[in-house]
Amino acid sequence: MSGSLFDDLDDPGDDPAAARPAPGRSRRSRAPLAVRMRPRTLDEVVGQQHLLRPGSPLRVLAGEDRGPAGPSSIILWGPPGTGKTTLAHVIARGVSRTFVELSAITAGVKDVRKVMDEALTDRDLHGRTTVLFLDEIHRFTKAQQDALLPGVENRWVVLVAATTENPSFSVVSPLLSRSLLLGLQPLERADIAGLLDRAVAEPRGLGGAVRLSPEAREHLLDLCGGDARKALTSLEAAAGVALSEHGTAHGSAQEPAPDEGPGAPPLITREHAEEALDRAAVRYDRNGDQHYDVVSAFIKSIRGSDVDAAMHYLARMIEAGEDPRFIARRLIISAAEDIGTADPTALQAAVAAAQAVQLIGMPEGRIPLAQAVAHLATAPKSNAAYTAIDAAIADVRAGRAGPVPPHLRDAHYPGAGQLGHGRGYVYAHDEPTGVATQQYPPDELVGTDYYRPADRGRERQIAERLQILRGIVRGQG
Image 1 (cartoon, rainbow, N blue to C red):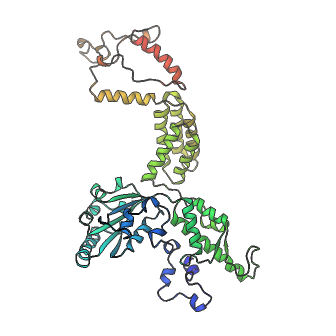
Image 2 (image 1 turned 30 degrees about the vertical axis):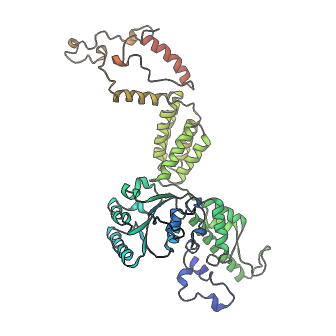
Image 3 (image 1 turned 120 degrees about the vertical axis):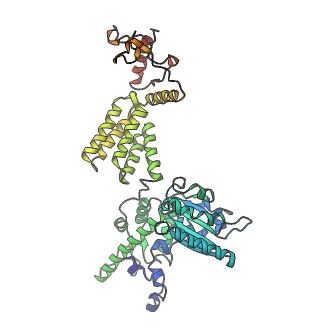
């Protein structure tokens, strides 16, 4: 659609001959709007101003700031549509630059070594710097990344690598230590708004062939999720719908809309934008940072008793296609870790939700998950059981695990009685209170309190009972 509609948008004028694509321009005009609007200089880049200050590594790489230090290899890390590829192409326009682009999806070790050999020749014989742009470096194997090391270390190439995943987990340490890690942030709403306005007006964009209504503009901004590429792609699709309807209307001799004069460019309405983009972009990678960041925020919202935030993060995970069994497992852990005996029914609710999801599947499984989230987030909180087991484990690991008292040892096998096993054991049910005064822990742990109930929920009553129980067991009551 976009090819036929936008072929001639960068050739303004009334002359029919001028309206036809000039030789060699057809391929350029058929490029997606997001490609056509790609900045040509760092000053045209929207957002990421924290990376574009004077003297910054990106300015040096682009050849705008020169000093005694040479350009550094960089790894650009950020969500899709934040300008990683754009920055690489701006850098490529620097003087005395040879720009080579590889994709980690298709390139192998052989391709990398070929680039290195050619870069060394260009540097030593022609004085040209080779900028190697490697997209999706996280897809490179360790062996493929290792092949980059000699060229990066000796500056045969200046590596500009892009990734949407945390380089700490996806890039080998030697390559990380030889590169600067630059984090890109999702674009601000105002940045993308300005980009949409430029794309509508500029000749290399839509060249004024359409107008963008405020309602359509807001819809695109609401749903693009800080992704400039998605915003421009959706704008292009919406423009295609508007132009198609405009052409149909003119072909049927309909009157122009009241707010349009004769010959006015068609208006992209909210309906056109909704047809192009009816669902928000959800930044979520089930195997990457967003997976861990969102679930971390989810659990912390439950722990913090913010049921509304917890519902938001649950919705994000569901909409992104997260495995509901993973969500249910996290709820079970949260119920035991953060609520515990302050509300013993929380764990039951979490387990029931997990079983319900297994039985009914999705999308209906979202309902028991939401019920469990509401229960857990609004329940009284206590991590007493969690801290108790961790403290006990810490003592065991530190060597505080003395012999089991003889009266507690197994006395059921032949010869156990001769060893004194079970001798002196008091059967708790024979005591009037059902609690026997006797030593249970090893000698060195007598009097150690691991479980310390909180003064919240059911644990308030447990704390009162526990004081009585410890007094009887330890002979202090």
